[in-house]
Image 1 (cartoon, rainbow, N blue to C red):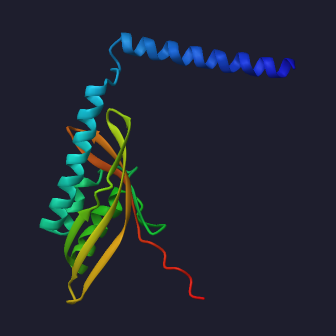
Image 2: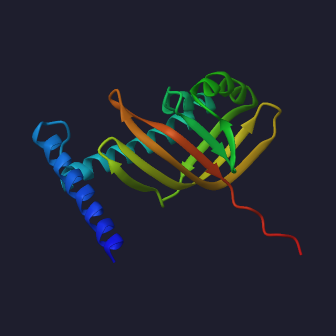
Length: 174
């Protein structure tokens, strides 16, 4: 019983210390409370970012992704459970190759776009997507799936900190 009480006191101490630390940061101006109005503005900014991504990728092709991927070593992108770009340097070298292979993409996000604000400068986004692709060899492809990413606001704009694309897995053949 004393072990349980000790754990409860330790948890209470951590909670109070954390709350006090948070209050000090706010008092010193290091962080700002997120009000309902601010949340709405941040969420709309993320939604506008997603619209811009679809517009620019549709207009300029796959090379447009570069301006929307964070230029940091922490960036990564996975496709169908496999790493496509392990970091920003991979994007810089690999994206031009993708642009040579896929000449045009028409990207549309579904009406189910979700924005989960984690902080005033950080959000998780998720949406179904539909792509029509025109490849350099003349064939066309159509893809439908789901996209998730972490968007971060830095240097005055939103960028993806990481991204994941997935397509539905076909049902097993009996």
